[in-house]
Amino acid sequence: MNLQRATRLALYAVLELADQPDQQLSRAEIAEKFGVSSNHLSKVMRELGKAGLVEAVRGVGGGYWFCGNAKRTTLMDIIEIFEPARFDRAGQREPGRDTDLGRTLNLVLDEINETIHATLNSISIKTMLQIKDRSRL
Amino acid sequence: MHAADGMPADLIIREAKPGDLGAIVEIDKQVSGVKKTRYWRDTLELYGGHRESDFFLVAEREQKVIGFILGEIRAWEFGSPSCGWVYAIGVARDNLLQGVGSKLLHELCTRFRQADVTKVRTMIARQDHELLSFFRSYGMMAGPFQQLELELNHDKEN
Image (tube, rainbow over all chains, first blue to last red; front, side):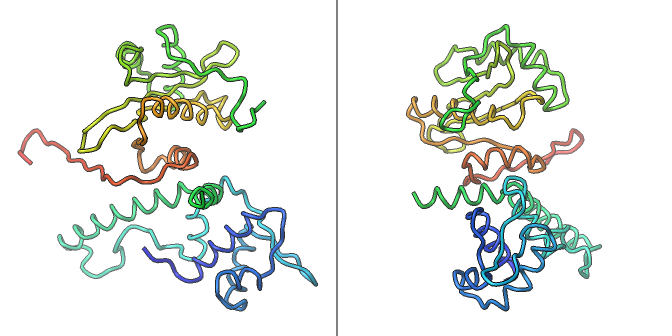
């Protein structure tokens, strides 16, 4: 399963900030860590700010804080900001959807979507960081 | 009050007894919406310490049962070597988000380890995001098995 670049950057940014809750990080610092341009990240951070997940501190020495709830915010919450219809029911607007084969294909794709949905909805930011820490041991 | 490991320190985890039936039925009813007195009576009898591979534990605070967990060690089902299974877990509604479930699961896993079991598994409904989140927060990830099912119709052969 692949994510759009902006979605992946959003996840990186939220996780990085949530992992250091007492520290604000600049867009440049986050961009450098993940090998992207600061400009590319700016729209992502704006969307995360609108969603109430990060807070920007302006001015010299400014940066971003994670201001969401790490236990309650899931990966799906972030993905849906950038890819809102990604895991909707399969093929609702695709040609052939009303044929037997179209319905059968959508049945299989929906099974996959439901599994993905369940996974992404059940992993919080806090759990992701725990997985990261465990994998370091 | 929590101990150094973050687990609630005032909680006692012990083996379930027949006298716990009422509390277990009530907690499960809060969780599942269904009152299953006979099921839990039979389960208490079946898992009530008769075999070393069975574990039916309750969490008690101030002499009141506020949670339970049911598990078993099974070997060679679905081709899998010995593995601990968590069949059910329930925490009273008033005691949610207090670490009770975590402590129950932790104790069950400790007992699995003591029996030289190195893997624990469970199965959860896809729609139950809360329960999925709970087990994932403990460190569980998706396993290598895929659960499949089939409706058996009475009027035709599948």
